[in-house]
Length: 157
Image (cartoon, rainbow, N blue to C red; front, side):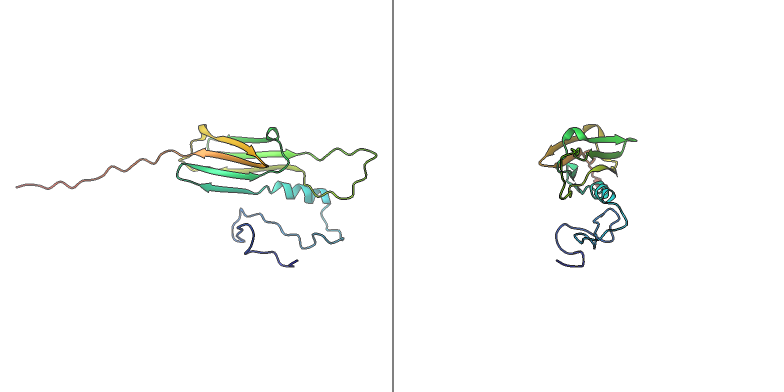
């Protein structure tokens, strides 16, 4: 186990990217207590749902890692005409009096992420699908208007 977070391996992350929220806890796995209660750490871990946004010639595609969440627990909305909002919540499992928990690692809580869509996004034609814990949101793009060609005309005598 390395004591330094890896900036070069695994998923692409950029320490200079303000949207890269890869959190590293140097005390993770140690039997010591940090200032934040465990429930706050769980919520923050889930609140930073990992999202990939790629642009293809036809659409903007968002992929959100939301394992263990049903599609009914996730909302995809467009606010103010161009703001894509993806939100959801994972509830904590109810505790029974006779249950004895040995370890709780799965995070719970709410998350919300917002993205300003570009002008060429067709916000009325957004599609979303959930498969294997990955939410895919596809925002089609308007076709680029082809510039009219300017032809030079020879002037005859």
